Image (cartoon, rainbow, N blue to C red):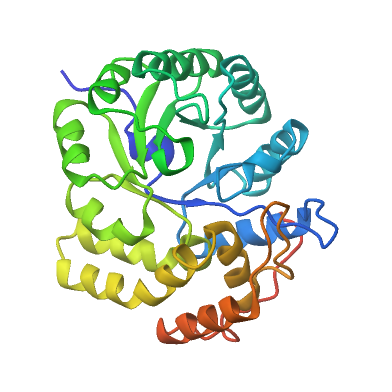
Length: 314
């Protein structure tokens, strides 16, 4: 008997990008910039986006803004991108409301992290995720990011969560490859690398795909890497990874990924501004010099990648 359930790659995609949220100089959402970014991501091989995740500055988005962005991504990408809504919170009741709103706004799936700050037990983490998953009625990607939540989702908890019919995948920002391989071997959970620096190792260890920050600017490079691994061309995949190292370092290890990804998108002509909301601050001159050097070292011609981008995707 064959399994008729849709594959995780068809639900979530393989080359996902944690989208930044473009903003006007006054801090309001830049709707045309959001559309421009969608055009850019589609044209560079992205097949799924996380809206309102860490890179999208979720802590400073209102519920209304979040719903509008999900709908905009759904409608203006003409259903060509899977839209995964970030619903990370430390309040389970609020998380269930967020999940329902995301589903109503047109999200394809949910990204649910462990509750931050509260530091519940592993049983509490599992209950939190299951409650939110049940409320949304959508496929779920569990987000394991202890550097931000303050608590890791343990291997046994991930295996327990895998038994829930809606929980289909893990975005792993923990960076423990051995644990990831163990969970993949013990469950049907699809793994997505959430650590840009480790994209190639995760793919080689069996990850279904990536959820990248640097991909805001260079999703095409990640598409090439994924294809190279899929076809067994590891020399090519390694060459792509090595070429990306300077830019990955500049985006992920300078200040914050959201800050540097926006700066990179301005540098390559996709966005007109790199405004972020407090408590984040825009890139300093020193950081921008480092980013420019990385773009050059990575072989990205800033001028040639700048294009006229329509305000709407018709």
